[in-house]
Amino acid sequence: MFNLKDIYRPRIRHIFWKGGYDRKTFVSDLIAGIIVGIIALPLAIAFGIASGVTPQQGLITAIVAGFLISLLGGTRFLIGGPTGAFIVIVAGIVGQYGMSGLTIATIMAGIILIIMGVFKMGVIFKFIPYPIVVGFTSGIALTIFSTQMKDFFGFTMDVPSGFIPQWICYFKNIGSVNLAELGMSLGCLLLIILWNSKFKKIPGSLVALVVGTAASICLDRFAGVSLATIGTKFPELADGLPMPKPVFPKLELETVKNLFSPAFTIAILCAIESLLAAMVTDGVTGRKHNANTELIGEGIANIVTPMFGGIPATGAIARTMANINNGGKSPVAGIVHAIVLLLIYLFLMPYAVYIPLSCLAAILVMVAYGMSEWRTFKYLLKGNKADVAVLLLTFGLTVLIDLTVAIEVGVLLAIVLFVRRVMETSDIHVIDSKAVAASEDDDSLNPEDTPMLDIPAGVEVYEINGPFFFGLASKFEEFDNRSNSGTKVRILRMRNVPFMDSTGMKNLRSLLQRARSRGITTILSGVNDSVRADLVKFGLDKEIGEENILPHIMPALKRAEALLK
Image (tube, rainbow, N blue to C red; front, side, top):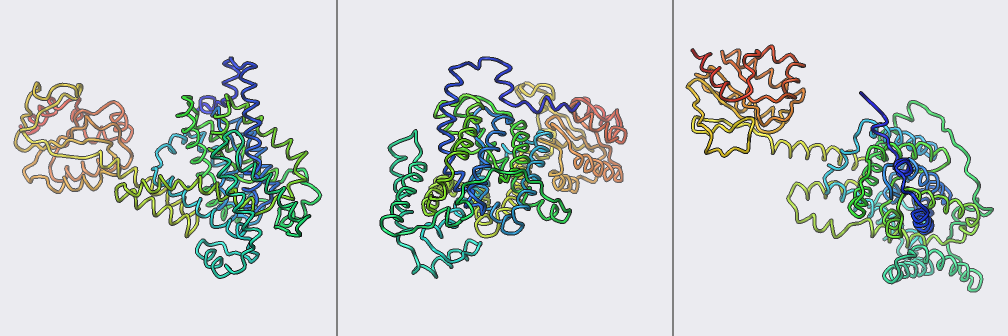
């Protein structure tokens, strides 16, 4: 019977109910939460601007979603918020449908995530082939890098959205590079690299944000050099960031239909990124996450966050690892991180208008480099041709076409690859009289200790290994066409068949009908209880006859001899 309590078990409830949460653990969570909150600040601002929305919306997302994902999710350590993976898809939705469209798409994605969690689909994401995941992330990284070149070099022209048109535009306007902006970008980039190589506790992106902002103010006041800042791009923020107000978008059927595909993309991206991050934390900490609870928690967060003006959110691997490395022990650290960001939002954000866009571009270039996984990409190119083809196809679609298309094709590829690999483990082969009869109820026996099969003339024995599903259809046709004209009885040995799907049942029924039309009786051998129950459910037990469904090969051969006589 369906029971939501068995599916949805927030980690924070488990921790406090089970006990053991003491003052020492709280202090560790408090310190980790403060540090992660400071780390998340520049990233939230940068992701907001890069996604085509305001820095305010990036921060709201980190606050609201970060709080809800930690409170309602299925992991101890995951830190939620806006991530680089969403930049491309969010910018595309905002450009085409506006903020109301993004709000609707994000809410729809949240609903899809909850449905995935309720129907226990969290485990599925563990089986998405690694080349597909690397293709997505590397493609997103390159796209982010490409979009930041305008602010990195200080270009002022309008840049098209496509990857190739962007670079054509950059090269055509190479002579209009702003040297002051480029100098700020390179300086911040170098500072991040050098700082991160020496210091681990305080992130280089935060140091670059502070130093870059101070340098921008000094250049403006004492040298007369003005750089593009958040204030020049969003002049409405000059009086400070307003408090967010609940947003309830107007739903129209046509808009919902158009936004379903982007919403599905957001949901899949969210599930992939968060559950991959959760699996990484499991390996680092030795703890186990609840994938279905995490999907439901993130679904709720993505329904609530856009109502306050936020954008899609998921678990962020970099901030999560910072949480673990700084002593985070429970979801309380994630809640503290959201509270720290809220305090910064309330009291320090009037100064955000002075942050130079070139500094944020440098931060996002480093984010893109971290996401690129170029070493893994290079390593996977040494794999088999199928994996290389999947990697390059997913990467190419993400960069050159559209992330939504890449996600849809990637999910389809994952299904096709899974079916192909299952088919490789499933086969049908003929057993002749020289074959050895291994016992159906004990596969560990030495074949030399078992009797030889004595298959009489007029009897065919076929052994099926692996799931009896739609992938075996073509193999059934092949062996059915090879049947001898003198065959009177056909035994299907099914001791190694763990399950049958509805297509397998249909194929078996077609096989029975063709055999019956040729005067051949079909006997099943070694059918397990699960498969037998499915045969009864589909009525195939009556078509075959209870007397022709036998537990082992030896009584099946005796039944065949009786039929021949």
